[in-house]
Each structure stands twice: as structure tokens, then as C-alpha cells.
Length: 145
Image 1 (cartoon, one colour):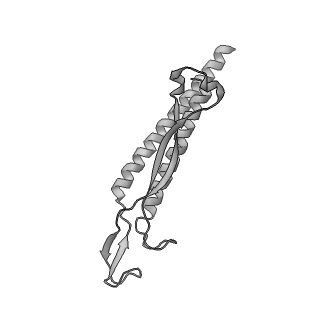
Image 2: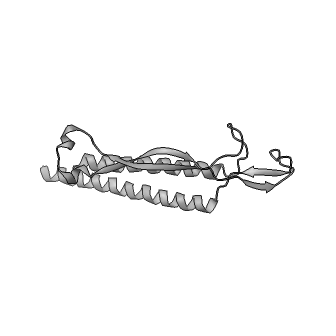
Image 3: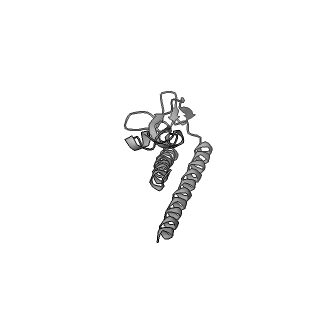
């Protein structure tokens, strides 16, 4: 594996984790949103990631089997959660139904914060990986002098 391939892998993971963090932040920001442009309460979203080959060039296809196993990651889709909304009795709320209940998104703030911490740690780990690759590349350049 060369330095560029390693950087590509790290960059793909950073991009995917950034998207994950943004989606979690959106969920937290909309935890009490009862009306959206689409109508009805906000629906929780989640990120679906999948692995993908780092490089599909002819050169890579001719390399050994170990090199072919190198994979990056990307966001395949943003999934909309279909959990039922939480009904809260608030007859004075402008979005209350005829019975006085307001439909709120079923977003557990603790669950979202735990997911945010996990995504943040994943992002930080990938930043460390990219920094290590850059340091190795600089050391290799120093050796060549």
C-alpha cells in the first residue's frame, strides 16, 4: 500500500464521519420540530455507510490479492427512520390535533449524544491516521535526500 492510497482511505472515512456528525446534529436540532416543509413532525435520519474499493485502475487490478482487499468507506444513503411519533397532550399547542395531542419526533437525545460521541471519536481517529501518514511520507522524503 502506498501513501496516496492510505490518504484516500483516511479521506473517505473523514468525509463519511463528517456526514454522520452532520446528520446527528440535524436530529438533535429538530428533536422538538412538530411541523416541517413536508408536513408533520420531523423524522429522525440515520447514515448508511458501505465500503468501496479504494482504486479500480488497471494497475490496481494487476496487483496482489492483499492489495485488492483495501477498501474505503462512503455514505450510501441517508435513511429516514419510520418510528411512530410521540404523542404529548398539549391542547394549547398550535399543532395539536382534535384530541389535544401534539406529535413530536421520536428522538432520544441521550441516544443521539452517544452516537455523536462515537462519530466524533471515529473522526478523530481518522485525523490521527492521516497525520501519521503525512509524517511517514515526510520521513520517507528525508531518507531520499
